Length: 337
Image (tube, rainbow, N blue to C red):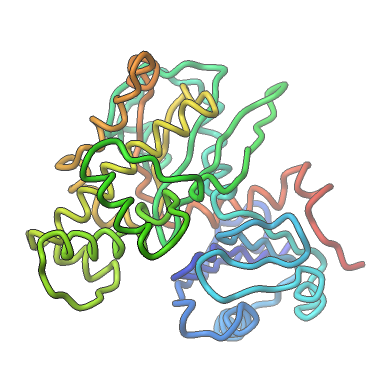
């Protein structure tokens, strides 16, 4: 098998290697995308550093993967699937959306049909329950969360076969719920003609909100990256903390929208790099208020249990699952024979 799996976002690229079906993913390496001109350079570095022989690749990337040309949404990397497979002389290459991989890492959780969650069961999937609910079996599971972008995937099933519904849900229109969010939208519309949820719930989204909060308080500031803003927020810096709280409040709206659109009454799993670092501030935000604020559908949304994923390598595990998935093997994989 000699399978290379990857999880490539706008900021980080994670790589792992699986020798055969029974072996675990190992040689896990985290690289910064900005340190490499292209995906080719990052792949070469990873393979040579770990002295690996690669026969197959599954690349989960932050962006659409339907065509031969794959352009990452939040960095300047792009590649041609056929060309890349030939360059690295692999037998097969599969490119999938990163949140499809995230979603498929929870196939066993989805199929369990649990309605009560023991600590032991949740630990098996590296999950923490952050909102109790009553899961409705035979409905769908939402996997979403902010990183450099805002990923969205829905798991559904047909004849006991789990199917990921992929898309670009993070790039739908930002829908403000109150006066401060309307002011944020108006502020961003001064610089751009279209504002998506990803523009306010993501790494760059946190930067946008931080800029808005400083403008609102008439404070001169230096442009900071999202990780620095997060660090300041955890140290109780007023503007940084308010920025993170506002981002999480808006995440509540986004999550409830996705629940309603795809009927995700089985549950929600929130993943992504930002939630791992800043989730303690989620409880200080209006996340749960915005989540429930759905008028006649408040009860519909409020009954949905919500989990936080603690595992940053889920997409690598999901990429391996995709390699063995009958649909992806037949319709989405490129083979060099």
